[in-house]
Amino acid sequence: MSEVKYSKEHEWIKLDGDVATIGITKHATEMLGDIVFAELPEKGSNVEKDGTAGVVESTKAASDVYTPVSGEVVDTNQAIVDDPSKINQDPEDSAWFFKLKIKDPSEMDALMNKDDYDKFAKETSA
Amino acid sequence: METKKTSLYQLHQDCNAKFVEFAGYQMPIQYSEGIVEEHKFTRNHSGIFDVSHMGQLFIYGGDELIRDLEKIFPLDLKNLKLNHSKYSFLMDKDAGIHDDLIITKTSEGFLIILNAACKDNDFKILKELLKDKYKMIMDENRSLIAIQGPKSSEILNDVINGVKDLNFMSGNWFTFENQRVYITRSGYTGEDGFEISIVNDFVDKLTRELINKGSKLIGLGARDTLRLEAGLCLYGHDLDKDKTPVEANLKWAISKERISKGDFIGSDIIIKQLNDGVSKIRVGIKPEGRIIAREKTKIFNQSDVHIGEITSGTFGPSVNGPVAMGYVENEFSKKNTKVFLEVRGKKHPASICSLPFYKKSYVKGVN
Image 1: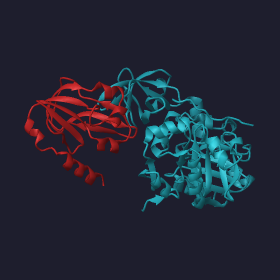
Image 2: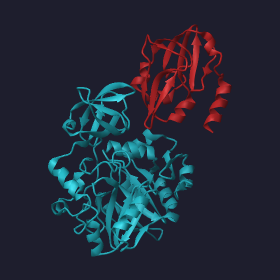
Image 3: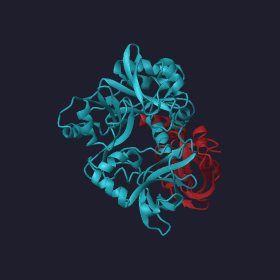
């Protein structure tokens, strides 16, 4: 399994063969506060790099979830729809959002590694 | 204009508050535990809210002041007992709402608690209506905190003895550290609780003592979810100048005695609407499932006709689901009417429901 990469929209992505698992970062959940609603893309649908692929809502506001790469949605995590508080509890592991069969592995190249993302997150929230 | 800070700013920082600008003030939106925990803690234990940004307007006067205020507010102020409070509104001549407020009769006149964003305008309007006849002080030297939730009576009474004997919507002067504090049994969360007016220099000490006794600071985020579950209106959202108290379904707050005379600002429209009905009215709205319909969400009937708009909507932590209120055309305002809410381009089913979403547990009378 490859290294975890991060997007400027605060998603993480983990590639296993040609299937990518995508979720939102711990930093994102801290900015959002308590998440009380999650909407995921439909299984079988196609999503485009940087397009919206879901929604999370806190008590305060709704935020779009973007996909950092293009592909076909092969699985979604119903557990976070049924209990959105799971996203706050374990955002970068069990509370993943969706899995994509990716189209173009080179789309991964422009994404950040953990160190760069941590730096980016710190700078943008300062 | 520079944003103002309340006298509890340092304490908010010490409690890791996240701040937002609200009505020109730096106010805590939440603390480290987050809105959902803060909301539940208030419902189950006791929460303290810094509402010092709200206006505390003291108007001094006797019987003449009562007569003049009755020309402004739809209340029977003549028969209001000393230290008793009423919920009311400042209206224009078309009964549009300038502000909603709590007015209390004190030994020297009246104390009116006003919304932060409206207080300066309210002051101007009232000064003009009262023709400068009375001393009016918007007291910037006093802070205002609310302590709300089932354990609040016990906690506050431990610090300021005697408050537990206050009845709902009544108040009195008490003493803390040799300072006179005015306390009313009231609030805006749907819970039993108190509002405490205290000089700025002592509010930090009082609040820290209440925290030591087991209460916690709660931010504006949870204040919003608490009041919405309790079916209470937020000015600038559920109430504004384009809505009347009758349309806002607040006719319970208008004195019947005063309606029969009809001699207050806006009374013509109020009486007409009470007699003929209104075209739009505020209702509770319960979305099916988990979808959250926020302010400005369009409401449709079963024939896909646009019939209204959401004015407040969020997730209610105690209801454990979405809650909303809004205005719909009168014919669709009956309880259990099926409607549809347009969220992100899709229509989601919901139904009209009665308010509150969460049952109140006010202490009605202890004496």
